[in-house]
Image: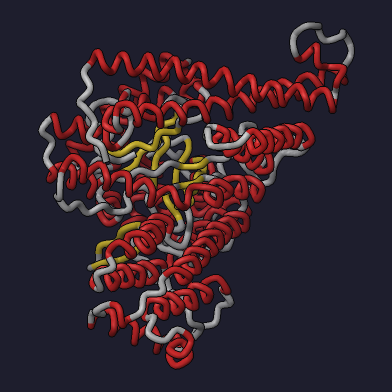
Length: 637
């Protein structure tokens, strides 16, 4: 590797100018290439609109067919421009790294740690941040913005073709083959119905979300952490850092019930199973890839006693010790991985047999991967361990047996309605007091403090209330049956009072989500208030101060990791107060809530309900993070 010469401010300006000029020239070439293919497709499919598409003629009045055809052509053209923009942006970043070194590419780990080192940030401070960091991008379902999976796949193929065409090694014949493939993909966009004739089902939305994991996201986390390690080693020498699985994914798809009658308990359970199935199948593919490569014979290494004992144990557990020894004689690591495959196949079968060979949970799978990784390293096969096992281990730590942490969102009107039904059953049909009354608060507090010898079985609840309680009961069972992190948070929309939060805790208690340790109950499910309107944002400080001083909530937050999450809404606050007012109130709310968390000894982290269009708070992520009030991020988002 060649050492890069330090770049001065003037050098940086010069490089930026060169990069911008090269990017503009390349973008012009790509746009011209795509336009040429678009013309060919239009000439073949709808030649009568070519002059209209090229803005040489106007759309004939009252010609609805021509209007639809032109809109389709322009729609496809804008999609192609988006793909070209992504391709150009990625090419520019690569060129920036080649010309100035990764340290000078904004937004990279290398750039951040270069600045940190110069600012005197110590390795100990960075390790402390890594140990407490928690980043969870969350997929949400907005059917009006989501493209069909089929269309996304075409976009990806076009992107890959543009990437391949960047290379200069192709012969004219090979290049023409790529261009022909590109033209065919543009044609497929024309022939593929982009718009849904019906609103997509929740199941289709789930498929849309999982598509990104199948295509790219599973393998991006180990890549991300490898880049992090590389940058740390570059700037902090041989200092050993422990990197926990701080980057994971969340999802609302299949769990966002607020105003969506199609997200039923059955749909949520089906979503959980699909989330689990897709990652189990991914692990099986990765294990089968490893077993093809891991042909290390024990005669070429010195095997540790620790791994030998682990191998004996897993072979005995599999019941195939003799056959594996004959099939792969001396290939101890291959034998170990084969047993792991058998156990993962047992998870995939999911037939409920008690004595079936399978992983009991993701923790056991992670332990086996760590044993395999350490066994290789102890046998002087560190490079092989890092190349074959470490990436899968990092995926397993991030995705476990659930792909994403599925959040549940429900409106406070539903939880309050359910509690009102319970009140009437407990009080002989007497009308419940107002939800902000002292009597209602006293009932919530007394019920939360009352020991339950067994979970209550309410007899007179209506359908809405029964569904609400059944959902919480399902969450309790899924924690034990699927994955302890299958669910993320319970997000309470339209949180307007402390009673709203206490009410959700009470419902969790009735549903069996409380645990009792040393006669001190706490809730297993994190409850996250969502402040959306301007008024709620302004009152959030006083509400959270009372919430964080309530004993049951303090204990629960401590047992859940010691951090209270709060969600702030960008879309609804924009609707309520306008863009400028909303952003000002969001900023003030974060600053005041951060201070309250410090005063109460419980850090508050924010779930930012932003993304997509500007009206929903969308912005480049780096800019969005930098714009938050000082002290409100502290490594968690």
